[in-house]
Length: 229
Image (tube, rainbow, N blue to C red; front, side, top):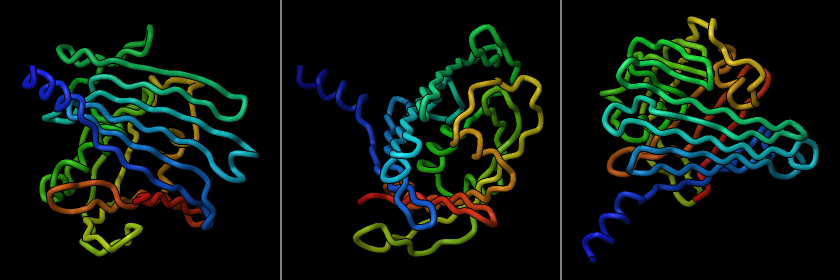
């Protein structure tokens, strides 16, 4: 009985991390990330402060992935932004490599990755495996490719102390928008594939890899998420 209980606990174990998102130095949202050993990653984004008064947001994203390759099995989201509400989900037929959104089917040719499986992967694999490698990428029906470019290793402040991190830039190239899912947009999903935004991650090195800092910026605005340790 004890062995069965231990097995269940081990399978359900999750690694959770909380972040504060800021823009122009103002705290605008809290982000909670949970990664499960069974191959699931979840994000909850809740607006805070003045942002919550002007345009309240509560978005949830959930993704299932292969624990070896990190390719997507399924994903979905529930979005609440002001008066706007929507949901979306998709599943992958791993045999035929077909991605299905309701009645819409997209032939992906090979196993596919999303922003969420990429984030799970960068917190599991070392930089020498990931650096410069392109992965087939899907984004709400849009097809392209994505990669991590390792820039350097540096000390990053993590709330209580500085931590040695691998610094990456993430590139996302959308190559085909033929099957783009219309009317299911939200702040995060819309802007993360915008080529005008520079996307960077700082990942803690060694045995317990996790995102310590993330930054998305253009010439006029910068969003920074920092671990809330």
